[in-house]
Length: 443
Image 1: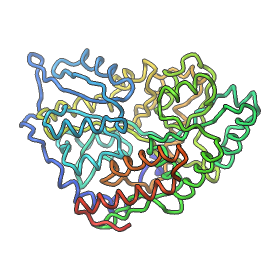
Image 2: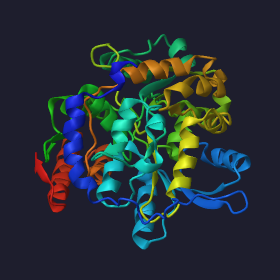
Image 3: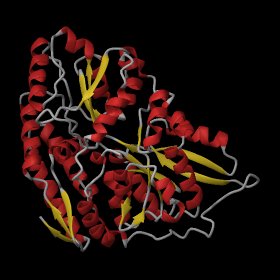
Image 4: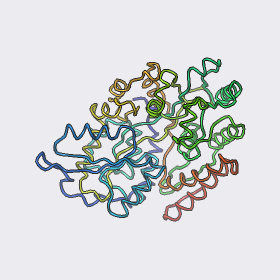
């Protein structure tokens, strides 16, 4: 295993110490019955599952067709930051939550600290856990307990219109300096053309770039959280993107909105800074542009490979579920079997990059890369994943951080607030929330 995929032992131990305090708030078993909700062929157990990830319905259909003792009822919900997390939280508080939910790595500590999930360690044996990237296991292990089944990894990736870049002799940027040059060239040859979008509603993209640059917003030191959203690395990223926005070198459309999609379709947006899962998004959104898009490593500050992780999903059992064993069995099937991966990826809407390393060949085979001219995009994902900066950790109040950033970034795109102002506001709101929860914090 490439060591670049793992975080340092010191960082992992420190984070585990601080997270042990907040995970004590989580539910130990959620009231699960002795069997955890196992069914039989004559009387199958029925699970409810909420998610928004592409291909989820296809996976559920495939599982139901091949399993007799467990049946899954699927409900598609908005993506987490677009209302999905609020829906899950409200359902947990109301006592009518589904059995299994999708939660991205950044938000897992938040849900654990709120006591919304249950420890699934007794249903997730060591031989299953070792299938996953060490980093994915660390991100789902809080306070020595297992809180979710990892699904995918999400290294950053840059998607670009090959035809536009080639026609106008624009080099695919390898550094952020080259990226600005490419943006200037694109605007010069076509005043409407932009090679990327600053998405005001999506702080996770900015966080991934700060992660790539070496920032550490949350750092655990014993039982204390150290908070810093204005370190040198973050400020470098903030100033860079502020310059792109001020000079109108990037779009500022809401992520995956009709405006964003229309700009891609009419050619006024010719690039997308996304993650591994973005390949399926573009393919399903722009079928008429097959063969016109390419995939490249995300630009870096010095030209050497480096990446943050933009999202990445897990499957977690809510505290009220009495069907934990069946829920984890289904989640494990989605994350660790070729059948599960093929069912999700083959329809062409998902390009999930499995956290189970052994499934990478199956994922590559299942995804028709014709949209990208047959390019081996999974080899690129693997190289990008190996370059993920290992120092980043998520804290227990990411929801507060991201809600504040989302609000402030909307003002950034409107020109009334600077990115550095948005980061200060997020810092203040996060600091207040940490203290409100009785956690020790420096920042």
